[in-house]
Image (cartoon, rainbow, N blue to C red; front, side, top):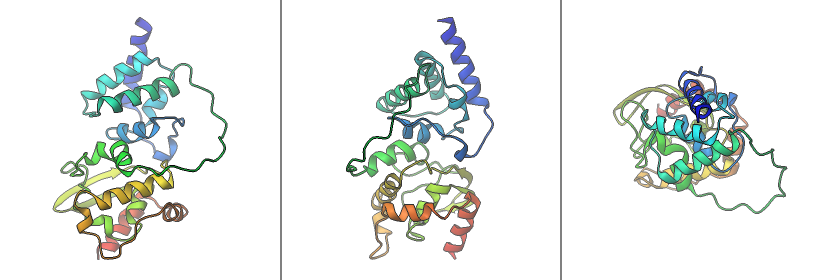
Length: 236
């Protein structure tokens, strides 16, 4: 019990005091629940902390998640269970060996609603109305249609610099979510564009994003500051 408590204290200290690094410096082990950790934990901090804490037991991770609730972590019981299972399994004392690449299987269609809930709702809220002065609303956000692939570039490369969305002035930094697959990004962008009233903003004949569109954008790397500059040019 004492060792678990000490593990929790060490993990919590790392969680709260880790130096900020670029998202590309963080690579979490592949496994069920990984996208939830990426999406939910970056609401308040980078991912150096869970990486530094790798190896602590399940009850210590459980205590860390309890503590994070006091810092604003809001997740459903189902999401919490998935995150805890991931951390305890892949970031615990005995992580499984890296699995060999499985034979290619026909891919199932990615659920855009689930992608939004797992990765984006922590910052932009489940109703996509954002957090005033901190995270922009996606509901009614014309940025979604500035160009066919602009929101794809925001997801892939992040966005850094002051913006104004429907009168809400925000100066924050969105980290890149380039760990997501092309299909996952396409599904999320299409979901947000067609929900929360955004379908009424879509120009006539505006085509859905495809995984191939995301792959093409991925080949043309940008910085988050360059994405901000692109947004400014598209608004003119």
